[in-house]
Amino acid sequence: MRIPLIPSELKDFAQVFRRAGRQCYIVGGAVRDGLIGRLVADYDAATDAPPEEVMRLFRRVVPTGIKHGTVTVLWKGRNIETTTFRRDLGYSDGRRPDKVEFGASLEEDLARRDFTINAMALDPLESRIIDPHGGQADLERRLVRAVGDPVLRFAEDGLRPLRAVRFATQLGFEIEAATFAAVNGALSRLKAVSAERLREEIEKILMASEPSRGLRLMEESGMLAIVLPELTACRGVEQRGLHRFDVLDHLYVSLDASPRDREIRLAALFHDIGKPGTRRREDDGVFTFHRHEELSARLAEGILKRLRFPNAVIDEVTHLIRQHMFFYDESWSDAAVRRFLARVGTDHVDKLLALRLADSTGILGHPADPRSIEPLRRRIDAVIAKDEALGLKDLAIGGSELAALGVPRGPVMGRILAELLETVLDDPEQNTKEQLLRIARGIMPKYGL
Image (cartoon, rainbow, N blue to C red; front, side, top):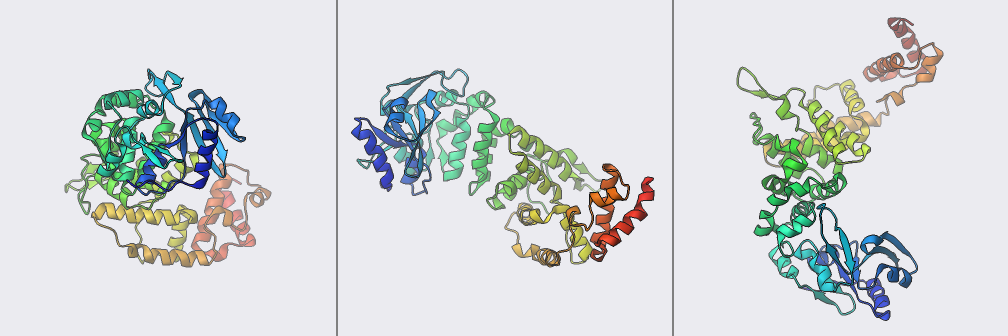
């Protein structure tokens, strides 16, 4: 395979080691991606110099993982994670080595890595690839294969089976048969992996060009039942009507059809996971799933919290799921469009409409026509252009004005403000301070004020 182009600053970096009588190689994903022509953003290095020596060789070094021989060198605009050649001794917890032993050779260092396509090194000064495990051949065969015995590799780190799926999904590769067969025996190790590490791999799978491929591999191997059991409950749940697929395949197709946006993809994957818990067969044999969006949002919230997603992500994803069941037709009044925007929020409209198109694709089994959402889009744009009140923050009065009227802060004030917003959504001309104060005075007796 063609040797990837080596940036000049990496050659200069390696030259520092050579002048000190040390070795330095580029390793890991940068070598893999460079060989297949993918964009390389970050470079990792491996060296026979111990971390303390690396810290003496360079002025700006961060001891990011010095216990395991790793420091980050800040060099000519790059952050180069640099690790000393090592042997990993024992993995009793299935997550990290019990002991790290330095003084290994490059070949020994490469032998401890997970997959052959990640177990290559590039000599930046000699422009040559060191490939003792056949990584280049596996790249050409588009294959993810464990280094050595896959059973031993997976026993060392319970996350490796999921990483195999992630690489296969990102690169469009197959997983070598013996490597995939070893997954089943490693499932107990997977259960011990931290939520943060699981989340990182799942996010990368979801952002691939065809994320359903990874989820199907997880399902086939048994990983999905461990990591996302709420999804496996959707398998075999028929929907009928316009739906071509059961609930799980519908979610897979919707996911693939969604744009590469984290929140939209998470919402697409989870938007119907409440259907198994809400399915009812009516007298005519038709299945219904009343209020499944509410249960789906609650289940999604539990999953995302379990995987330690940021609260802002959880809030947006669950909001999109709760709002995805809307049905627009041209009979909507302007007031109905304003209520829709007040409920959804103008900041979420674009993502919700993208989710709607992905959902439609998942129903039909072929790409939904993007023109189908244009009538609603035009109505929304027209309403937004008028700069009318669409939320409590847009009202001409707020809590302080109501407090001056004698309304106590708390639930009652919230209910009065909600009533004022409903009035303004019906008739935007009512949104003046004088008029809203008059309306508020009329509402107050209802609450004993």
